[in-house]
Length: 149
Image (cartoon, rainbow, N blue to C red; front, side):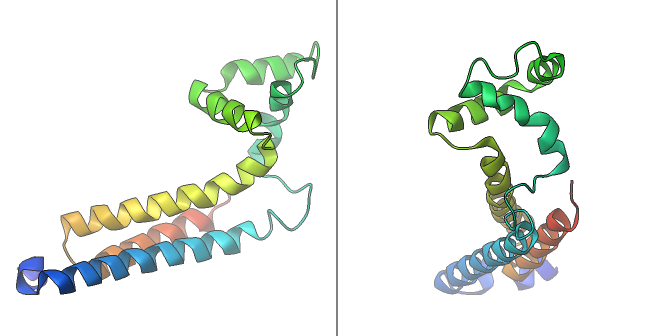
């Protein structure tokens, strides 16, 4: 019943588009703000990396230098268990001379923006109230950036 009161049919199409666009814009702004606040520590110094990045990124030096880490069994093992898509993403980034550590710092805020936008659209598709989509997206962004994992 509540969904019928706030459905797009009850207001003009132009008002609905304006509310939908404003809600999406605000949810993306919140996602950017939370991502910025969380990533300040990551960009504060050169040698700050996420815990898992120390294990899963160091061997990617081999993309630029094939002779890096010769006879290193740990590097060989971690390279062999890395998912194919993960390796391809970082290999393509290495063709553009992007540092894997830098990409690992930049990628999470971008993925947070995509997740916030998707979650907003999904919520509004289920319950057509832009304010509900905004609140759901903001809560998702808060949850994403409250944890270190």
